[in-house]
Image (cartoon, rainbow, N blue to C red; front, side, top):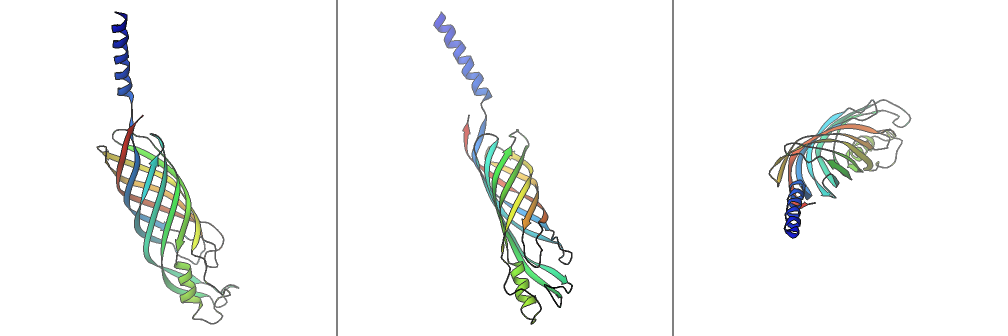
Length: 217
């Protein structure tokens, strides 16, 4: 009699534990469209819109915490420069130059795994690459003798940071739609065309993500 009672209680306990157990994917992999509003901090370089896309991979440590790798690329865009005469640019510089941008960012992501909508946030660090400023040097500085007081093209690499969040809408266990992710993105390109200040940008993205390797804890 006592053994039967123990078995019944054990079965009830196991059923209760199964009901409370949560599933989460070990990995989330996806692709997205991305828009970034690039905002230089010098008054003579105009802000401009960047359109592109990329993707990210998240390896989940548990239901809530994951480590994210995010890669985004933006196609060639034209930026106008109207630089007044100054010690760095004795004759000033005027012209339109094309350039692209690529960001590679890594860091923690937190997500709340509700049934219908799953909000998340991330804090990512890494770098940014652009050929814009080297193109400015080649197109605007070199053709004019003494037009620039710099003798070589600026570096294409800079530190970058991103903080923000969004929502995922799951369709079953495997696929999620991300209608919106909004981030503040900071880059630190430091050269005669940007000065030494941080550049502050807004980024919006949307895409489709796949949940892989579900596990229960």
